[in-house]
Length: 516
Image (cartoon, rainbow, N blue to C red; front, side, top):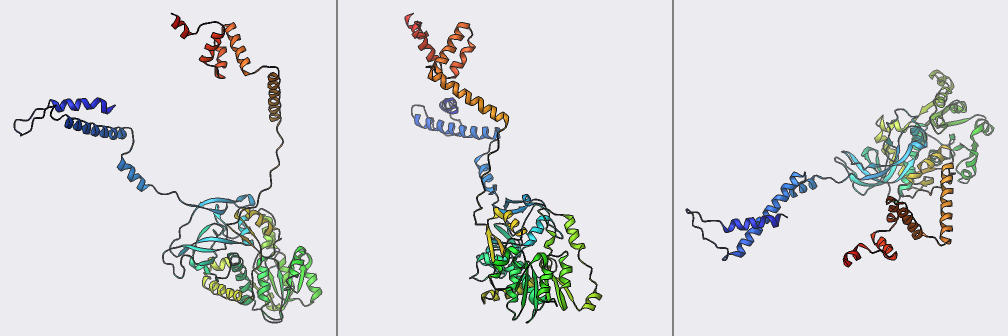
């Protein structure tokens, strides 16, 4: 519209233009330069159109091309996301969910790890319940142990580069596709070691090594009573204890695990946990030299009672606190109140020792990172020499983490449980069809009845066209024009009316005009 209305005006202005008396200007007649005038007019029209469009865009709140370009430069890509196992609140398994979280960015002194395998530990069950000291604020990403490849390196990082194969012990956030970890908690793994083995070996064998060689100083000819011998740490302690000659191992675990553990040939006496004190006394009336307890509660008193003079009792866990799916304050209180109070004077009189070990406190609260790193190097050396080999019970997809936790809670695993972010989740069982409500059943019954009525009508020679014709005739007979409207809605229009009128001998509007 702009070109057709403005072009003649511009052309007319060009024709009536007169030269200025003070300026030398060639007088151009329309006949001599018609093409030039048309070009000038067209150019003017183009400028007017462009200016008008820009002005209209500005008036209507639009943006100019320059503004669009600037907006595109400022526009940032949406943050990348990853899958993670998130604890939304303390309690049951329903609070453990797989959610999308923004990918982390490594800060100074950190590396970003693409996670290939994660370790599941009993400590993770206690975190889910909120049964640890200084529990994290929820929601939070779970997990203390993972293995993978370095994908990015932060500033001030030395000794690590992109592509390195590592295992890490972050304080939470390990159960995700990506995790940023300070380098003091990151360790290189041997090239021949798989990621699953790396996730299964570090924390369990770290605890076992410190217990066996640093706290107990296990020597030849000693006897060891070990609770939860079928678990990840239990299997690690057994393997490390076997590196010392002539050591007798009493392994306590559920009866269901005895056959599988006996096949390894590493445990001298397998004992059911229900009455292990009497079973030990049947083998040796003197008792044992070392008790390793990860249960706490009343087991502390029983274990201490089994110690020989010069014996050592080590507490390194409190899994008896976890008695159900959710936290029970009663079970926590009972677990601690069942422990007898032992005074230094009693230890002095009986020639016994007590010790405790908490890896989480040592790493994150007591700055034991250098001591831990040197111990990890020793463990990898034993692995290279073939003296230890992690036992992996099973691997699970992130989506199946609740089922993996349940297996550990029920003490059904032999060895380590591992999470693998690349695994496909198990197919879920089909949900049984719910019984229909009375309202739904009534609607289904009425719908079935309508279908049967339609079928009978069709069999009797009736159809949609007949019904519509009857409707129109009834409307005409009753003089009600609105009643005929449904026929038009169902596909009848003005053309159909003309056909019907012609059939009945009436002339259509077009025929009337022609005849007139």
